[in-house]
Image 1 (cartoon, rainbow, N blue to C red):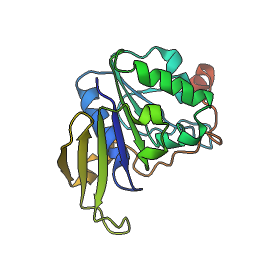
Image 2: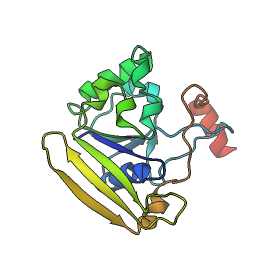
Image 3: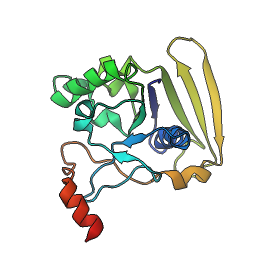
Length: 198
């Protein structure tokens, strides 16, 4: 299973790229895990709208993920290259080294790829550069251009996602991801049960 890094400006389709690739895997019967953030109201705010398993980024190493897809949006906020001593980043580096061996297709987004810890950012098999058409986010979205780089090749492949709004139902394209410092802790299973049952 390859590791994908998706980068681009704000509103360029980064989350769409990982949501779409995760959706393809989901439709093939592959379990999908997603690091969905906690909202200010204490409820999980889902990044994707298809069946998935919520996972806290700090739990990824301890969960023993195998033969699945893992989605992490705005990963540069968690794996900041300036904080490589942080325990969360060290655990993600360990996971990064084991993901392929475990059959985990790890997909993450970042506005700037270079902001990610160097040991992690040099490991993706594919880097998707997202380009919005038109570039100015204030104008209606027409298409998204993906420039896909394979780290073992000097050539890239260009893919156009025409009418990308067709895919808006599979993910929450307006969801903001809070920084890890202010993200609320996820509730226990008992608290989640209480939210669902009432």
